[in-house]
Length: 490
Ligand code: NDP
Ligand code: BG6
Image (cartoon, rainbow, N blue to C red; front, side, top):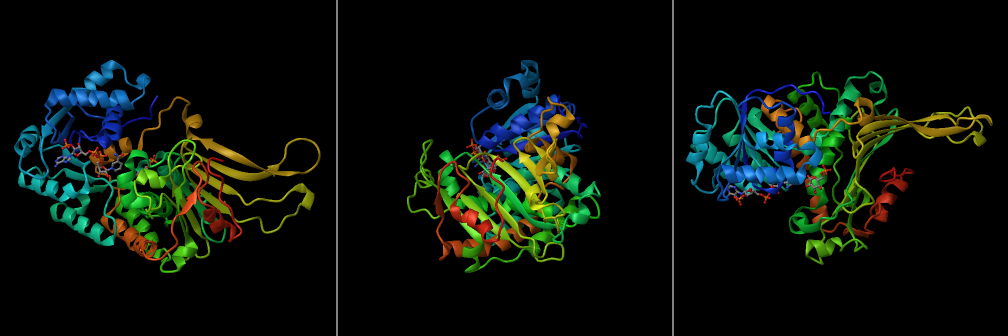
């Protein structure tokens, strides 16, 4: 069983980099699932575009292989795969020359009345040339949309240059900057939780919330991506985008409407209200780490291929938000590779009850915790203090009130992958879950001084044990404030 679907308008989707890793792992399987669910309208066309010598049949075989590799066998009956590969086509184009562009134009000819989406699943250095070629080949129609993937710059200056390149060719209303975390089911549920219920909003502020924790922990190492990763590190790879977006959605004011600009305006205000962390404050509020060699694999430095690398694969930070709602309530965030387990969650830790009416032997009253779990096991949990059941008088225990989506909505429901939802939003023309150019720049403007301090004099990354909760300084970041992280995977 999959969630209900509403068919989208007829569209053509051109995936530049259609033979690459992202297309094989996420885009083609995602489109396949949407096709299976009946969401793709009759006549929808998916065109892979790359330099590789291949014809339509070759790309259909490539697509079949991607689906067989990345979709569970039970979810891909042969008849569905056969029908899906029949709607894919291929154009051999080179972003850096005129080769192949007229072939692509032929495939799109006569289809100007439908939505036309170009997905740039290629390295950012190709964004400018591809935009120019799309324009020169006359492929831009009134319903054209352009989708771009991270990395969206590596600092404010490069992000501005990239935004300029994109806005020279397209209007902001045509641009879809992907942050796949925004496509995750629970991220949207966070908005539903906050803005579709009156219950939490009165409590959602520094009067009632002691602090917020945001964790995106991965158990995998950087592995074969060491070369790429070492140029970026966790701050650029995860914090500047995914974690900042989660923080914004948690902290933002209620938008007047659930529409793309209203939501993005509110997120932007949060980014602009972040307390700057500069100079020596970086050593106080930012902890960086690198995993050591463990029984299951080599150290970060070995995988990065540079024994002197100062690039972090773990970051923990204490962040303040300078506005009325959040003054005095810190946000602690952390992310890293090769940690104890894979878990992404937002924890809202409410303040302790102001006074306990119970005797000391009844047990301490823990502050309530709202845990919004993005993955795995998407769901929301509220920890309450209750009476420990059974005879023996009053004893207080902390117990979870659980809402697991899989349980509530039917055990066999398949949660759509973030890319599935985002691809369909592109076709629908809904930019709500995509980053606007000014948001990307505001996030870089806040990160830049931190990176600057890390590059010039701030403490080097601390080594942590593979499979642990990260460096000991990350625990200290909380302990010194009298707080503690929720255990990774608790
Ligand atoms: P790959 O290296 O696997 O694929 C690159 C694709 O670009 C290939 O299809 C390649 O085909 C094509 N390409 C390269 N040069 C040209 C050219 N001159 N003209 C036309 N096509 C070209 O990269 P990924 O798929 O991993 O990543 C693509 C983008 O998505 C990158 O920006 C990456 O940072 C981003 N991204 C990737 C993620 C992932 O999970 N892989 C996750 C998040 C973002 P050919 O060589 O035949 O032309
Ligand atoms: C990507 C990062 O954006 O997100 C990767 O580049 C990271 O380094 C990945 O592994 C994590 O995504 P998810 O959805 O598995 O949490």
